[in-house]
Length: 323
Image 1 (cartoon, rainbow, N blue to C red):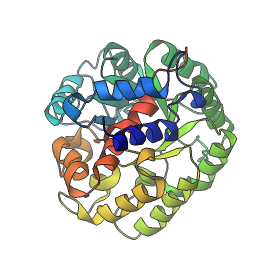
Image 2 (image 1 turned 30 degrees about the vertical axis):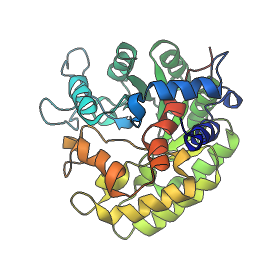
Image 3 (image 1 turned 135 degrees about the horizontal axis):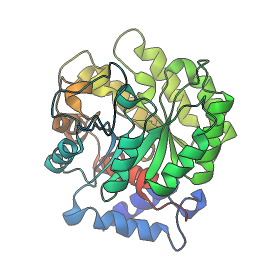
Image 4 (image 1 turned 60 degrees about the vertical axis):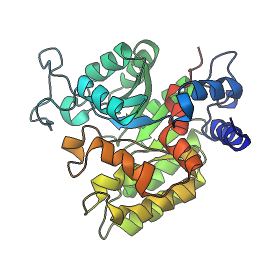
């Protein structure tokens, strides 16, 4: 391992909170331990790639019933088998499965069963009802027994993110040492900041970067996203390029915004996700093309690629939790 690579990995472990100071690793863990794990996961010097945004769908709708009028992928797409095929073809090692609320709403059983049964390559991210007082206990159960390593937070029924029900879930997640994904638009930036200040040890990821998209809302939304970078526990999920673009691959109209976010947050606080299944969520390009935007089209330096495509995500979702 080169001296530069060694320094990069140590800085990554510190910045993502994957070290002992973050309070989320088990006894006997150290930065050196995780450097070895990262090296082991990157045979032959290849970049470790982790997909931080995949939605999964069961073909067994008797065991895992859908909501009324679900947002449905094309037949045969979005299954765990399909996901494994896409990952294998693209050289992706790990994935976080994000609860598919547009298909199952608050019923996390398929996500949790899948993350438990495929723990060798998958970690689960659940979504729970902030207006249900039983949700914090359910979150703890999922983390303890189902390999759930994160939760996606949305606004309460009253439209607020800074709400007692939401706060109770943030409190539980902070104690458990897991990651919170935030799915809101830029209008709730102040709520995000209030919660982050109240929960200084909770690592937070902004899903889709406040839903950035080309057009008149791009600049104001980008300003709000960049403003969040001053909070060191906030990370940016760079999944918005194909979903926000008005163009075909390689979606160049969103490249400048993406680079601005990387520069402001640093690569050590940015992660990549595929929006799997792309056939449903970003049909203008394939899984491999979405990844190629980051490996080839953005012109990122190799150190930045290592952080964005794998190292940061490893520290957030795949380093061992405290026993």
